[in-house]
Image 1 (spheres, rainbow, N blue to C red):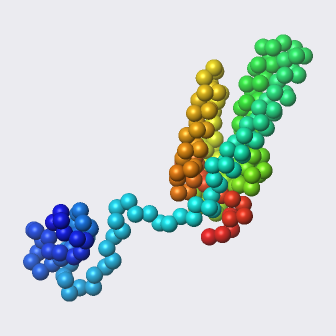
Image 2: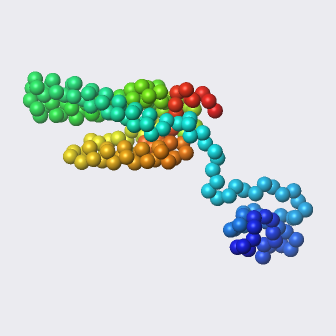
Image 3: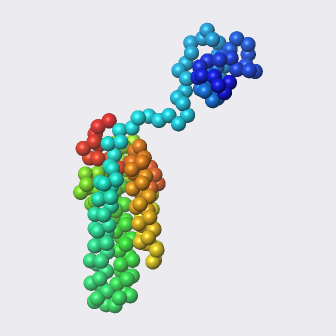
Amino acid sequence: MEAAAPGYYHAEGDPIGTVRYWDGSSWTTEPISPHAPQVSPPPPVGSMTVVDRERFGGPGARVGAALIDTVVYVAGVLVVAIPIGVATEPGIGFLVGAAMVLVMWFGFVAITASVGWTPGKLSMGLRVTTADGVTTPPGWGPAFVRTLPSLVGAFPVIGGFLNLALQVINVILVHNDDERRSVHDRAGQTRVVKVDRLKAL
């Protein structure tokens, strides 16, 4: 049957007088009577529902939001850690800085979970939603999981390179994916939607 066009045919081994649907490469339905109402054949393997890509934040807006968040994050850590380090000793300042990294990370998780945005996303007109692209905020579970990949930046010495590699991968994914999902979105099963399209279904 390899050369046969898609359609209903009798399959070898099936009861005499029955047919089933051939999609061009394989049988995709159970045997039925040719006189019975024929159901619509299943969609071809790999077919996808058309998605409104313009609904989701694109690479430019996502990169802009990430840069703003990074500045806020680093500034929040340094504003606390440097004065303490100067007033006491560098080692204490380093420990305070490490603690602030965790505090700021938890803060980003909290605001994402409760209101669906970070400072960067708020500035760029974006919102984090659940996988339906509508429900925002996404809640604690998805918000927590989607921020985990960002922790690669906390690794000593190589953290900066890992974070840069992560951002490059994110740009590629957001550019090519129908729903513009980054590594973070795939981890937390979330979407990033433009605020002015949030209510549009």
